[in-house]
Image (cartoon, rainbow, N blue to C red; front, side, top):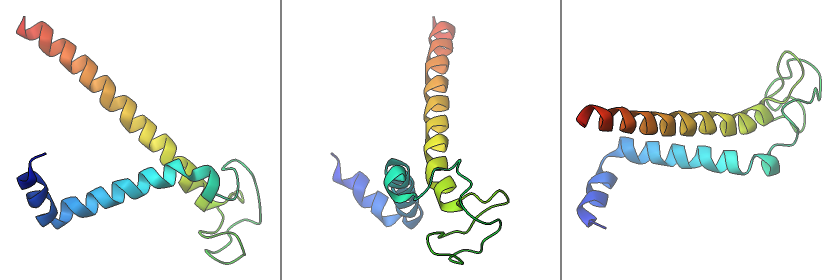
Length: 103
């Protein structure tokens, strides 16, 4: 690989921060079954527990008593899947339309 690309990439703090954030989201999504203590659909506790207000609830609970940390971890999977599918659909359709227009 070209070392000038990586040199320029590392100099831009915004792109490095974005890459680190994206990697963290991928890790969170991949490890969701191991790091989320509950299913995102289980009503596990009282309503509106504060973050760290009860043992085992890092971000508290919502209006239905679901663990917000579990919702966040499993929701990352859905968000990444939607982004991937929509990007692939755009590439496929865009390439097809562009090829047809160029022909």
